[in-house]
Amino acid sequence: MNREIKAASVRVIDSEGKQLGILTLQEALRDAGEAGLDLVEVAPNSSPPVCRVMDYGKFRYQQSKKLQVAKKHQATIQLKEIRLRPKTEEHDLQVKLRHIKRFLEENNKVKVTMMFRGREIAYTDMGRKIMEGILSELEEKGVIDQHPKLEGRSMVMIVAPKK
Image (cartoon, rainbow, N blue to C red; front, side, top):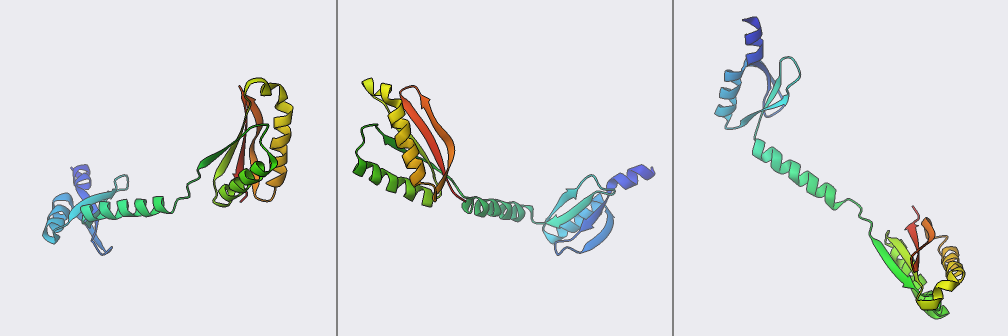
């Protein structure tokens, strides 16, 4: 009998945050109904369980708005790609370097891809030297995320912005 009474009683907190005390579940529901609000269980594992009188629809709306604001301020990092060839001329290489630096300043990662066509695959060492030259140019702007690695007919390197 005593256990039944305890199970049917809850600690109630009103909409302003004041404690109303320990009430039976029926009394708590009646008080919430009179106020035109909902009775929401906030701590089911405590003894007795804690319930709060609140507008649950408004509470869920505010929670979704908080999530939207948090998502909006979340930093998104994109992966940009720059493609090169071993025979890329010096001026074109400088233009691509400027693009890489701009991407790094915008806090994006950059995937530098050196593509080898036909017999160019025999000159992977030349492609690696160009990649190392790019790395030396980017020392102050970025850090290497993935070292130059040959994948099929292309050499790939990923550079991340410095923090």
